[in-house]
Length: 403
Image (tube, rainbow, N blue to C red; front, side, top):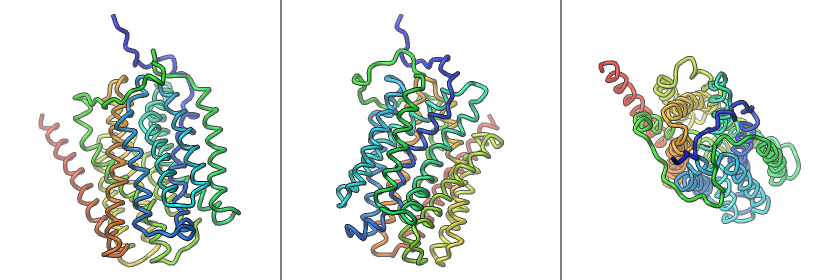
């Protein structure tokens, strides 16, 4: 009889999950660390707003490539080796940004950052859930998604404050991140492996993620909600610094970092509502709140009002967080343990397409339409997508009730 080498070790669940969540947050912080710094890079190198969106999207394509090729490799070789590789790519990205003096190096730094995030997203989410005792599984679900969104929010907050009020604005943020990465590497080394019968890392091969019939049933609405929510965060991360500077005359990088941080903080807080709502109801309600956030974003773009932009970050981020945690919970619950890493990676593939494709679209439209009008087109398209996702879920709920 052949033993399933991908079965999760029950004994490992006695270990703490917070160190893994900390490493998850640190890795994700590095992916948004350059956000308030793009203005400085534009002054040093010289490039257009379209180039900013392309540089940003290179990161997303790196994530998608990893998730598609090796998204479920941790189900075979184990969680720890994959996360250690992810921390290594994050450190390489920081080193490249320290030397960046061209668009090519910026793209390389973003690509390496994307490889790190691609290795972390599905794997770290599964790892945190598996390290938690059964009685803390709900808290672990929040810790995983909060580490993801909280880390993404802390990146621009950290670099915004350091670049505005400390010396060497293009150096110090990445040095601090390298120190945090070293601490995270040491922490992950102390954690137990949760996958039994692991194979050596060198045996890893590209694998197609397997979506079982149970997962497919919840994957479509979960993926639509994740796509729309991540697209909003992508626009805030890549385009809002330019909008703040050009339309609102806000050049303080700490303020830029705070506005972006507000969206991710609201996402984290929105996830706190999910246990009371239930994961199934959290997705359509999250879509509704996300539409309200997109309406506020449209108002801020149309009338150039900073307060509306901040409200858009808070409301839209909350809707994104509700939808994301609901989506992760539904997909994780429907996935067998031996396929959970791959299923979650597939969900994040859809989510990161939301970061890349709409953001590039905004960059392309900025030339002929201007930044504000390009953002209005984006808001309208994403509101329609969120509405379609919510309507799909409502129809499915009615069908289930009838059955």
